[in-house]
Amino acid sequence: MVASKTISAWIICLAAFVVMTAQASAGDDAFYKNKTVTFIVGSAAGGGYDTYSRLIATHIGRHIPGNPSVVVQNMPGAGSIRAANFLYYAAPKDGTAIGMVDQATYLNEILGVPGLKVHALKFNWIGRILDNSAVLFDSQKSPVKRVEDAMDKKLIVATSGTASQLNWTVLKSVIGLKFELLTGYRGTNDALLAMLRGEVDALSMPWSILKIQGAEMMAKKQINLLLQTGAEKNADIPQVPRMIDLAHNDEDRALLALFSTPSTIGRSVLAPPDVPPERIKVLRQAFSETIKDPKFLADVKRAKLELDPLSGEALQSQIESAAKFPPSVIDRARKIAGSKN
Image (cartoon, rainbow, N blue to C red):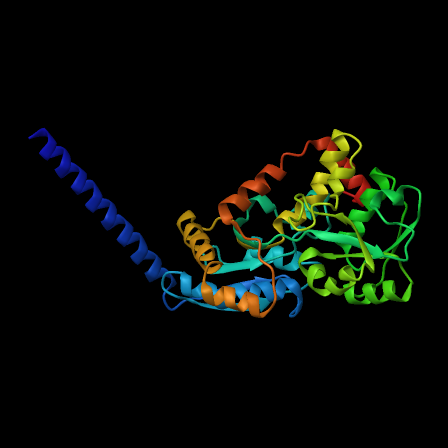
């Protein structure tokens, strides 16, 4: 008799759970049905951020209950600051706005970059498509064959963006590498041509791009891979040291770890603060399903793109862990970066 009552109670609980789950799913369907989700991209059309954003936007709607349409809106300006501020303050906070901003947004917040008014930890991180560790490489004609050689040999480095310029400035200041930085190049293609012409010795590219575009140069041993900027080593080049591996002590290691945080974020999707938790759960689930979708994967292969996905929960946790740098490290980083805040 007791066993019968126990079984009956278990059946009632299971039925209640099924009903609640169905109601939640129906609620999601009702909310998103006939709606449009706007995907804000913090850069102009073309380029890596736009490419990955449009790739996700093309497929994620099928995995959101109610199958909303997803529309991409480019919002370039000040290195994604305009888009980040918009998503933080002005975008709808009901799950109908998501986006992708510069991977250095969190670091820029710490450094007090003018105009950026967000608290990156309060964003709801939906998931990462790709980490973005860059690799510094130089011409075989350069006197520097390993990054350690730059301790006493000058290396002329082309920098086409603020992120690379900041990394090399930190290494000059903290490690003492004899980098001479040349700015003004419009992009990595111009910088690469400058290296091939002998105007500069070195430049950096995301490894996901260099491994494809530089495959022939590497095969012919025309370039030396010197350094990775990411927090984690790329699995296929474990012999190439990271910035953090050059640290002289624990304080330097913490500082270099701080400047490595953008690579962890890479190409990630986020939502504004204060979106209801149940909507964030739906969006994260949709993201997880999208990156396993055969149609999505076929498009990735067709475009010759790389993937290194991370769930929204894991990404949020990693960003929260990165926020535990002591004030002394943050103060030192701001001084090196030239922040006036």
